[in-house]
Amino acid sequence: MERVVELSSNGGFSIAGPSTTPRKRQVRFSARHDILLLREVIAQNPFSSKEPGRIWARVGEIITAALQDESFEVDARRCRERTMLLLDYYKKQDFASLRRFGTERLYAQKEDLLHEVLELEAEKGLLGSGESKYQDEDLRKRALEELLPEQDKLSVMSTQTVPPAGEEAQSSVTPTPDPEEQDELVEMAAPTAKRACQCCCQTYSEILSFLEKRSEAEQRLREEEMALRREELEIQRSKIVLERERLGADRKERERRFELESQERQVILDLLKEKCLPVLLANIKRYVDILQLLPTFTGFPGLKIKEKSIAFA
Image 1 (cartoon, one colour):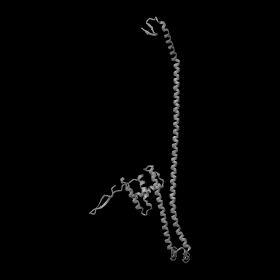
Image 2 (cartoon, one colour):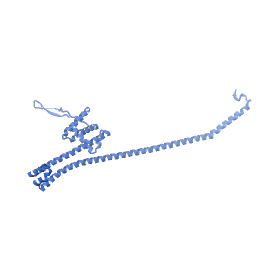
Image 3 (cartoon, rainbow, N blue to C red):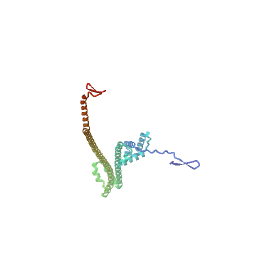
Image 4 (tube, rainbow, N blue to C red):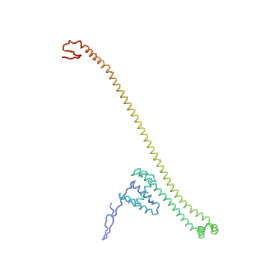
C-alpha cells in the first residue's frame, strides 16, 4: 500500500499524494551471513563499550560494505537483533533453528562463534556487577556522611588521612559512633554486598547451567549416533548372513542339477547298451559273414572279383 501524506497548497486546501520516502529492503540472513556477523561482533565487542549503539552501527557498516555486491544492507538495530536471536537459540539449545539453511561445517563454525559471543556477554555482566558494586559503595558512603554528625565526619576524614602511627591517638580524641548507628551502617552495607554477590553468582550459575545443558544435549546426540551406528551394523550383519545363505542355496542347486544331469546321462548310456548295442553287434557280425562268403560265389553272373575287391558289372 502507498503511504499518503498531506501537502499544503496555496489556497489552504490539502492534497493527498504518495510518500517519496524509500522503504528499506528486507534482508534475509543465511548461515554465511551469520558467520560474518558473529566474527565482526567478536572483533568489535559492543558489549564492553560504553556506547554500544555506535559499535553496533560500525558493525552494520562493515557488514554492508563487505556484502555490497549482494545488495545486503543492514543497520545497527538489525545486527543487534540478529545477534540476540542467535544467542537466544544457542542458550535454549535450539539446534534445529541454528542448523537451518546451512551445512554441518557452517553450523560448527557458527556454534564456536556463538560460544565466544556468549563469553563476551557474560564478561559484560560481570563488569556491570562490579560497576554496580562501586556505585553501591558510593551510595553507602554518602548515606554514612548524612547520618553521622559533623564531629564524626571529621573523625572519619582524619582516620582516612592520618598515617597508621597516629590512629590510636586520633581514636582516643574523637568520639566513636553509637552501637545503634554502627548496626544501622552494617545493615545498610550488607544488602549492597549481597546484591553484588548475588549478581555474580547468578551470572556464573547461568553459565554453568548453560554448559550443563549443552553437555547433556551433546551426550544425547552421541547416544543417538551410537544407536544409529549399532542399527547400521546390525543391518550390515543381517545382509551378510542373507548373502551367505543365498550363496549356499545356489551352490546346493548347482550340485543338484549336476547330479540330475549325471543320472540322465547314465540312463541314456544304459538304454544304448541294452537296445542299440546288440543290434549294432548283430549287424556287424552279419556283415563279416557276408564278407567271408563272397569268395565262394565267383561263378555268380554279373559279379567279378579282382584283387580282393568287389565290383558289379
